[in-house]
Amino acid sequence: MTGKYTTVASYLQLYKSNWHNHNQGGVHFETFIEAPQIKQKSFPICMHAEEDCPSQPEFIEKFLALESDRIKSWKGYQTIGKGYHICERTMPLNFKNLEQRIFEELNRLRQLADSIEQALDEVKGEPEW
Image 1 (cartoon, one colour):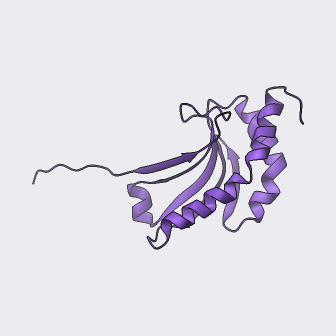
Image 2 (cartoon, rainbow, N blue to C red):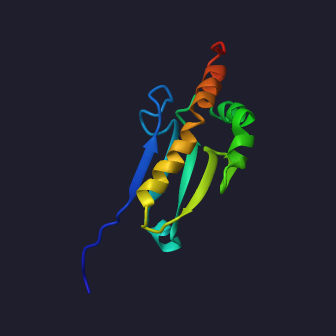
């Protein structure tokens, strides 16, 4: 049997312009659904600080010092702090209200924006305001 197939994947990143994510390699909130997530019937909602993030390990350390307790208080979230992974929650992949659930989780993560900017300022040597 011969045939043609395509892999369907959906990625979504949310970030502010000063988070060094112009090439999708800075600080961002992310979710994605690919074949493994469909098979597992779950998908991640996460925060990353990838290779374009200034002083990446130092940024992650400073950010988690500011926000680790809050993140851990959110149902289902875990802090990771290894590599570029900062935090993550796994969501069930049920199609009822999926868009609304993603929207709610990204809004929750948006609460971290001020601390992201504070940690970025600190690693760049800018004064705290």
